[in-house]
Image (tube, rainbow, N blue to C red; front, side, top):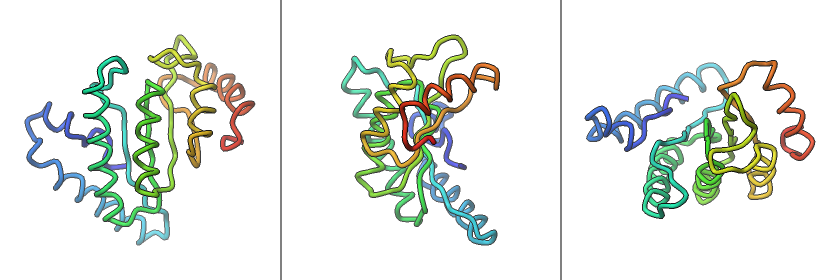
Length: 167
């Protein structure tokens, strides 16, 4: 996924917000070329931000706007599906899913569990967060990052027990 952190927020952080659309469209073009040349699926991507704060509606709107522009570019590029990954907050993952569904994009939504707790930053137990995302219409739910196999595998088993799309 070549769009990871190619968001308005991150591009602004490095003084390149003016190149946002160009970078995203070029990343999608490269991914599409590689996928088609190799008879693979073509994925677009969304990722977590450092903006999201469930107690500040303006940050929720900023995140929704970022997800919307990235989904629009992905839809225009003809992605087969979207990967929304590395969400530390259930609420932000849910927001990303809502936007992908608005564009009728098949999707994978991944929560990142901290290495010490099995809870999201907005205090939703990880298995429950994935089950909620599934009930909201996620095509696939997943876990990623921050843990090695020793701590990830038991958590995966807990999630599989409550998620149909994780079997």
